[in-house]
Image 1 (cartoon, rainbow, N blue to C red):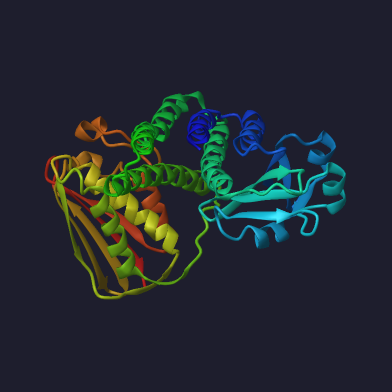
Image 2 (cartoon, rainbow, N blue to C red):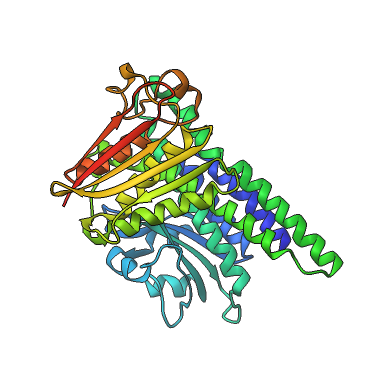
Length: 401
């Protein structure tokens, strides 16, 4: 198990560094096959032109099978309803795809995992055995699910890189920043994983129980770093989709007050160790709003994250939600570095970063832009207020009810 975890860690770092899709796809299939010591593996990707999942990377399969096998998208969406789902299927009785091709290829069972980003199905990762007696056990499934989550991130990164390659050379500096920002969370992730592996090995060698409290803390830290990377990728994808006019909203009624409190609670947990920030929430018990909850969550995470980030000395981040003149108004205030008056009109554009003290903070200049996009796509607005440098900032979001 330890060897397989170490291998998974190593290949994950490798995959996240491959930015060319034609190299990444077959490498994913090779990794999936070897990780679960399987007979074959296939990476299937959604092809909108064919309206089906098609094989883009494979290992241990014949070229004819890889070129011909298809899963209609309608069926795929029914089977892969949940992101990260893992299902073992007997292909002799419940085939995925063309049963004649499966029989000719001699495939007996498949461990099938969905690949998704932001609720959108990217494709599926299939790990095959030709031995009808072979079972994929819990460890196989657990490792494959971790791999599938990292594969989704790697594909999203590579697709984004491919899109950005089409822009002018002036974006080279931006690409460098993107690479740095996406890789930064990997360093603490690796350190925490190594720390926990060391503790696990010592516990096993000594025959003593593990420190579960320390394990919980480390897992929480790992989760925060993964959330950070997911947030970065989500923001980049949102910018890309907005540029193509494809940043769609999926509105439905939800409790905006509960959503505000939930996001603040996440930052309370995330900043607990550094101990510099406190949070105050002023919101009604409930406030029903008809909007895209996932996008509003993205907006709140970005704005509260900025309030924490640009208040390096700490202090109280105040979040207020109120019903004002037929709209829900969210005000997020921090006691941080503030914004010079000349800089206020500039901020909020894509890839736009502040000058002065703000320029010393890491970032890509898209968090505020994405929040503004989300507010405007809901028919609302976003405004920045600051009395000047070192005098804090307030962001006001207005969402019509």
